[in-house]
Picture 1 (cartoon, helix red, strand yellow):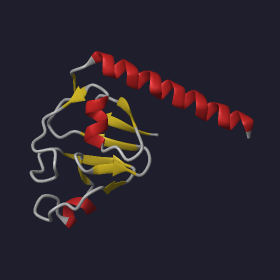
Picture 2 (picture 1 turned 135 degrees about the vertical axis):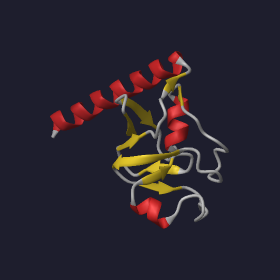
Picture 3 (picture 1 turned 180 degrees about the horizontal axis):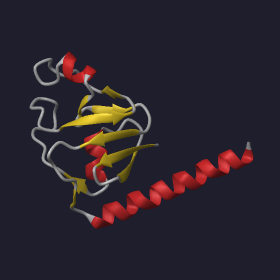
Picture 4 (picture 1 turned 90 degrees about the horizontal axis):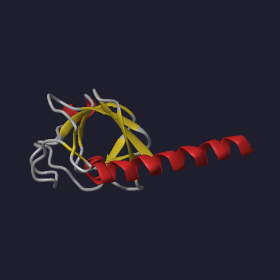
Amino acid sequence: MVTVTVRPTGEVIHLDADETVLGGLYNAGFAYTVGCRRGGCGVCKVDLVAGEVTYNRPIAANVLTDEERAGGTCLTCRAVPNGDVTIALRDEELRLINPLLRSINERARARAEAARQDREGAS
């Protein structure tokens, strides 16, 4: 499992394997302004501050240009993290819309951290 850290709040979201950034945020009970959720509008663009992503489906060059990709722009509805990533929202705030999902995500993150520490202690 990987994590997404969201700036400026510092919220850390735990994602399942092959889950998109946007999908992980919604599954953890958070939302921000998005559009089509299919890679066609570009409303969900954020800045990728750290880490790398791949895209699970083709994206039109007029939605996310090569220059934007090179500059760190990320289309969250299609971006699947290759490892832990940090994103920065653009003139937007992350909103908690489902506290229950947030608590489930926090417990999953705690279990993953405990497992990581156990692995490190065993080596």
